[in-house]
Amino acid sequence: MDRGPFLDLVAELSGDPALLEATVAAARGSSPVVAELPEEETRRHTRALTDGVLAALRHDGEPGPGALAAAEALGSDRARQGVPVADFLDGFQAGRTFLVHALIAAGRARGVPADALLEGVTRIDAVTTVLIQRMVHAHRVAELELARTARESHQQMLRQLLHGEPVPVTEPLDPDAAYHCVVSGVADPAAAAGLEGVLTAQGHGLAGLVDGRLAALVTRLPEPRPHGPLLVAAPPARPARAADRYALVRRALRAGETAGLTGLWRLTDLALLTATEAEPDLGLLLAAELLDGLDPGDAFHRELAETALSYLDHGARIEATAAALHVHGNTVKYRLRRLHDLTGRSLTDPGGGPAVPHAAHWWWALRRWLAEG
Image (cartoon, rainbow, N blue to C red):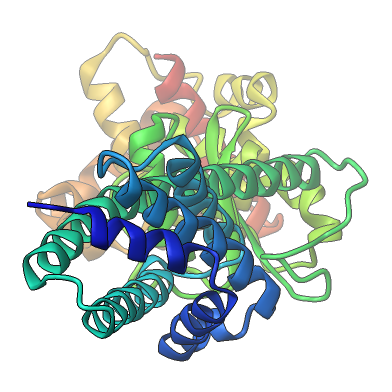
């Protein structure tokens, strides 16, 4: 088949400014997002791609380095401009369709054989398919680079805020909004990624690995509270106070991990546990004084201490303690009496002193004694 007439047609149209402008108009008219870009921006890419397609038709039908580079530049630029793949492909396909129709119309007017026109259109399809693949790949690469850059910037801001370093508070955080500071025991990046989505699903926030553990600043805590790894959440505060909350939450997390807690806990619920865990020696002194009659190596004595601790944890209620320990209420009463006999001290009667410190001291002493034993 003589391709000469078709190639002559392509050479004639390659330098036609009217064809370029019409192709630009077609691309902008098919995609509202592309139409929002400056017209010269669309013209620049359209000129490069049109020249590349026509050059490929004049030679061996394969897009040259210039056309491939133009396709990659289009995909990359549109990603950085925030134009989704579907929108910029709509523009490209509209421009391609217009170019094909223009070639067919001009070819028929000039008497180019139908077979030559059909072969030319087939070559255009092959060339544009290759270019589309390059565009989409470049768009995806640019998107990933932008996401990584933005995420790294956000992570750095989160670390600086939690470490108390001076840093401007920018998106996605609001310097005037109040955020819960949440710290978890999760260090594995894969597990952290899943938990990050749970923490940020119900409101604005930012999460990431800080000091080796997943930390977050979130406007709302997840409901229902997630089970699984331990998380501690501070009361909401502005980002400027995040470092103070972070230090407290980390202490509470360590105390909660020592106590074997799981799931989401509020920092204020762990206030006593956090304070007592910070002074282990003082807890041992309390245990030595209040539990002097108990032997850490005696299984029955440990059973008495565990029952007493559960009794305090359940508001000094016999039935609630019995249910928690899966024993009869009379068994709880008996063990509490035996503890009194062995220690010579009352678990609940402060002997005229303040009741709250009395109960707290017993709770602290029992926990420390059991932990040391």
